[in-house]
Structure formats: C-alpha cells, structure tokens
Length: 114
Length: 116
Image 1: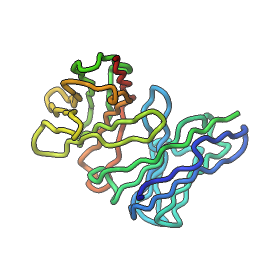
Image 2: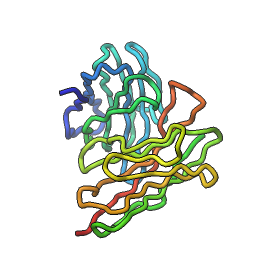
Image 3: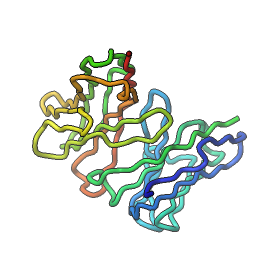
C-alpha cells in the first residue's frame, strides 16, 4: 500500500539528547513537510522540502534540523537546542510543492522529554 | 501575513443533529481554503478545499463549506452528524500569491464530539 510511514509512534528522550524522527513515503511525491502539533495551537510548519537535496525553514525551525538525501525520506532531528520538544510531530508529502496538490499525512510521532 | 481563527475549541452535538464549525481568516491577498479532519491518534486527512469557482464545496461524507469573501469565513456544516464524525477539525489557509510554493497556515482546531 502506498503511504507515509512515521516511526516510532512514541519516543522518549532525556533532556540534552538529540533524537531523530523517521518519515518515509512511497508515493513518489516530490514535496515533504514536517509539522509540530501542540494542544490548542494547531499545526506549525517546521521544515519543508520540494526536491531532493533542498529544504527550507518553516515558521518554527529553531532547534530542529532535516536532510533530504533521498526522495522517499525526510528525517527530522530534534536537537538539544529545542527548548520545549515535547509534542506530536506530523510528516506530510504532496506530489508537488504548494497546496493545490493534496498533502498526505503520516500517523505521527509523539515525542516526550523525560 | 495570514491567520486563521477557529473560535470554538470544542463542540458537542447530539447524533443526527446539524452542526456548524466556524472558521474565519485574515489575509492581505486572495486565498485558498481547506478543512482537514484528524481522528484520534492519527494524521490529518483533507476533507474539502476551495480553490476557485463555486463558493460552496462538498465532501463525500456529507460535509460542506461555503466561502464568504465579504465575511472572510469558511464555515463547515453538516445537516445530520454521525458518531463516526467525532474528530478534530482544522481549518487552513494559504495565499495565492506564491503559486506552487504556497504554505498552509492552520487554525487551532475544533474538537467535535457526537453524543449518542
């Protein structure tokens, strides 16, 4: 089945540690996105990529890093510089950049700092 | 800059009753408008979208939304809700100025709870 796979579903991290969230898609989509979801705040864009080996900062990129070495993969690293990393993280992809093409979302990763 | 306001954070509705989820936006340019639905512990799914043409758009599961430019609104309605409609609903906007490079701005969401 085609879709977007995020792993793991739940992730615990100690303060001061970096952690990487995985996002893989087999939809042959060019564009991929990372969003952060907090209760009562909706979704906020962290990073997005419209093509391999290129990505742009979203609205809340500080404390995060990404790479796009392969079309199918867009991992997100939450660094120790991110002051409040506990949140629900959603990855999405679309056939092209922009919103005219429907974005497909993964099931999310819930990150908790302990 | 654009923004989206969903005034109702929670809406409880009896089964088979009608519902309206409100969405207002602000933008200095023309916009595209979207409603996404999120079921518990899942990602988001596109419910419906307004790009151009008829201001009334419909989804396959009975929801509809009407774009009202003068009131800068895009309210979501359903004449008779079902238990399976229990979910969180997000309104989103993107501006038309950056064709092919638009980015979505989401509202804070409305949690719809259907009461049997």
